[in-house]
Length: 472
Image (cartoon, rainbow, N blue to C red; front, side):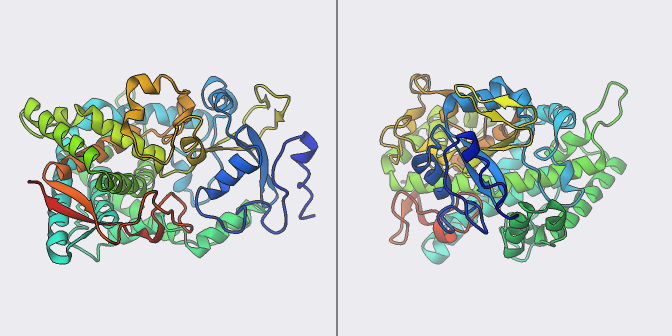
């Protein structure tokens, strides 16, 4: 009974590792590090083209071929419009990443304008203020301790910035170590034992898994209350604030009625926090780490910052957006250390995989690896070397568009990509304008070892100590 599906891929001629009880192949070679399971499938079991594996009894198709990925995520997107089912209360089920079909399409079209260039510019001062607080914190930590735990610092920055822009709340995580908002936010990305159990049980019974309580449930209710309180206050006291929450509140139909319900706005605000807090802090951490280990690249970024500030008459939004080398530094960081190690789709219409005779059944989960592709020497020679010039326009044109997937691909890519890049640039520019980052004796060597317990790509042990000294 427990192994009844285990011939699913073999009977279809699909290569892959042999499944075994109780995990199927869920953890690959027992409990491997983040990304190592996908690398194992990619390099050892035919996953560079495609292979099959199992999450408990659930068959999953792993696709690494770039043309196939392009077909799945772009060309034939109408066959793969949905993501994996997610557990959680009714509040979470309204999140954009969980919505399916027409409801997803409608919500996405309403939300997309909130991340336009003009909307980001309206949020610039708020983000810059939080970046200035980050700079003060880094300076204080360097004076007090002789080093800075940079991941912790960036976590406080992204926490405060999202709290302000998505919830209308002043979190004060730089000065308040007991912030309830910060504690609840951390629980959203904490893959604790109950969350792990829920994830495993889901492969057998979604209904049974939904009965398992997790810290996320309590956090969800906290944020629901916070958002509804802010919505109520702003409806009674109209606000000139142009943050993410207000932009969602301002979405109106042709009759002037608000399009998104309160519950949908709550869900999208929580998603903004869940998807943007840890991921952007991780991007910033790895960017700072790579710059600290390569002083020549860091000096080139600092010179570009100085030139742009002079050219635009100050640290303006236009100055921050006019730094192409910094853009390449961020892109190369995301290539080497993409926070999300894979992206997924669900087949919604029966489909024959291009270049094969494999028919994919409706409901089949497809996993698309990110890290193995990003570190494949066929696409990126000497892949572990940090080289921002891989992302010069002429170099990008030589590569397949699906060889770079930090934000996914196609219509269902990350909707907040522009905000994440904008936020990261503001933080890095504010810091590098005044400081130079250097490694300490405790700074891990390149490439950074990754945390085997983290759900997202994260530094092993969670600590990245750096020195931050005043520029000469």
